[in-house]
Amino acid sequence: MTSMRLGPLERRVLEALWRRASSARVRDLQSSFPDIAYTTLMTTLDRLYRKGVLDRVFERRAFSYRPCRTRAEAALSFLLDEVGTVDDATLSELERLVRERRRALKERS
Image 1 (cartoon, rainbow, N blue to C red):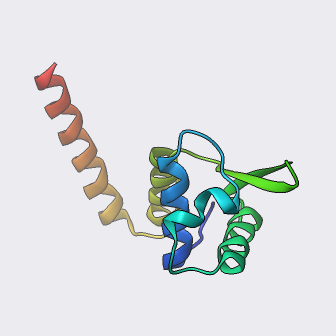
Image 2: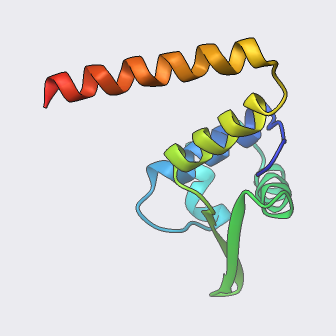
């Protein structure tokens, strides 16, 4: 999932998979995408698999997909990728914001 941008449909598919409690086949997701052709959804899942965003296994004559990371892990991974491209001042500001958030969390405990 490193340094990659996802298209709008790829993000929608990933969100749909995160909402599920288990892995899903194209057929399982199809009702969530009535405006998308079955083959387009299948291609999108395959593309996400090839990008390393999804895991898949072959079961019951079809691939079943699930996200490689939780939503929180994916967000953190994306943040770390983006932070790697910024300057020192931005990193310092980010550190300040993290310290501020930690203080606020401790005060609530």
